[in-house]
Image 1 (cartoon, rainbow, N blue to C red):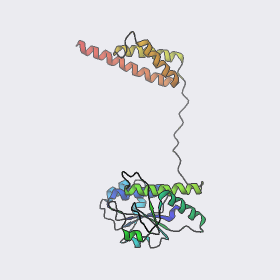
Image 2 (image 1 turned 180 degrees about the vertical axis):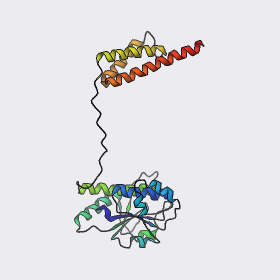
Image 3 (image 1 turned 90 degrees about the vertical axis):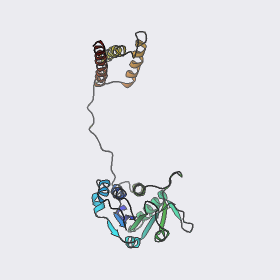
Image 4 (image 1 turned 135 degrees about the vertical axis):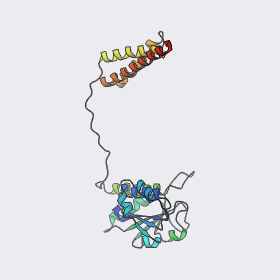
Length: 258
């Protein structure tokens, strides 16, 4: 479904934005990338930012004018933060839901161009006149203008999520599964008693606790360990820390004597 949506960047100025937009296209399953009169020169930066989606960048079509880029599209959606008084403007999420519902109900999905303007001043009025739909991406009023590549990603994401709501069987990624750790034995009473003794000695060695306060402090730590339900390996790790504290304290004493 989303393969019918093609991202069109008008006059992109920075290679990083073009590369990141290519990656967003691949992340969200959109149908490709078109560039209209691009002015960026750093192609190495574009490739770097397209990491994993280099083929989207390499296959991007280039056009002299916007009409050349959208000539075969049945829907042309322009994104802007400037209100158009004579045109209806849908917020992005509503547009995405409407587009997906219309596509799901139709016999064939209408080829759609998703048009984004220049980094500095967006789309011109003449370019917006070529659009069949106009949408805006909600943002906090302190800074309502999104970075170009971020805008592409947001639009692709909303379309992707709307498509999943219509078709739960649509391809989607899942969190990568890591190897389940092997069951670790729990710390035994003797492990915890030894840990407390080791910590008591370490705390006294550096003045973190004093003879008249150390028992209550260790008791508080024992309560923490009980809530944490330590494994034996974790108890050994904490004893390793206590051992290092004692070594450092002895080393300081030796240096002071010298």
